[in-house]
Every structure is written in C-alpha cells, then in structure tokens.
Image (cartoon, rainbow, N blue to C red; front, side):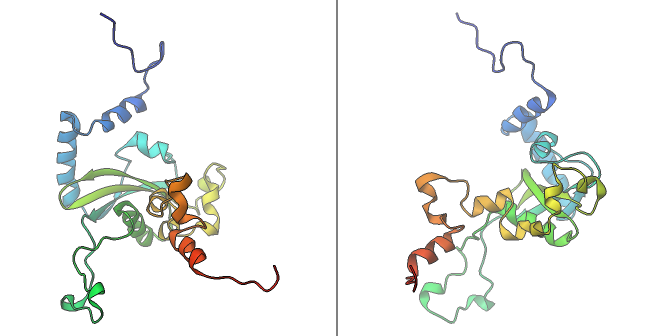
Length: 218
C-alpha cells in the first residue's frame, strides 16, 4: 500500500496561523461546532456593536491587514439575518400592483457590507479597512470589522497603511469600496461574466447602453 501524501511540502512545517486556518475551514467539526455555539450565546448577550480587545480569528485578521499595534482596533457587529421588508405603513403601496410587494424583497448588498456601514457610522473618526465572518445563529450574523485611526502618527508614517489616510477614502464602506462592498457590486467576476458592470457599475453599464449619444464633433 502507498503511504498517503503529506499536504505540506516535504521538509516544511505548518506554522501556527496555518493550523488556525485549517481549523476554521472545518466548521462542522466537533471543536468548531461547540466553540461557535458557545460564542454565539455570548455574542447575543453583548451589545450589537462591541469593541473587541483582540480579533477572534487572528490569522484571518492579519491576512486582511490587521496589525497588533497602535491605531488599529476591531469591532464585532451583529446584523439581523433575512430579507428586507419594505417599510410602508400597513403594507400599503399607493401605486401599480407591480410595486405592491412588501415581504419577499431582498436587499441588494450583503450583510457583511451592512455591518461595515453600521460601525463606520458609529465610529466616524475611524476608517474601515476590512471585515470577516466570525459566527451566526438563526437570528444574527456576526462580523468583525478592522478599523484604523488615520489621525494616529503610527499609521500616518507606515507606508503600508498610510494610503488609507488620503481623504478620498472617507467612508469607503458606504460607497462599496471595501472587499464586501465590491462583491455586492459584482467585481468578483471577470471576463464575459462581468459584462453587466463595464463602466464602473451595473447602472453605469445600463445607462451607457440605453442612452443615445450624438456628439456634435466626432
């Protein structure tokens, strides 16, 4: 019988972060199922927006740009799961039957980008860098959001992160510029599957195709 091939290259050892990554991949394992169940209970008792002393998923946070130094912080945000009910008084829409749907409507963006937006509004002096999933139960999804204080000198002198100090990055989470926001805009696709966002967005693509432009000088 042939011996099973090792998953890591010969002579290489797995680092601590690699072990954590593999552990988080197997979310149906006994260890993770127990941890997630206990943590979900704990998170439900805490406020919906809660500042963490350190990231729950250290490996994931560092992959997304987190540094354990001054100027960085992590917030956990709980977002209620499910679709978006249209907020009409008594469910009455004074219009055509086509627009009278109330219940089975879905929000265009994903819950992760909603979590980023909520903490971005709460902590207006911080900039949203990135976020990642940590837990979920029947009612909530929990995301941890990495935020950066762009006024802090440690951040301003670090060439790897001081691009975020540029004023053009104010409230990037509200404009679909974070990773979760770009996913909602369809930027994870390339090639012919990305035809509906040529020109910057699906609306820009639609507008370009549906407007006749007869330029005077051409």
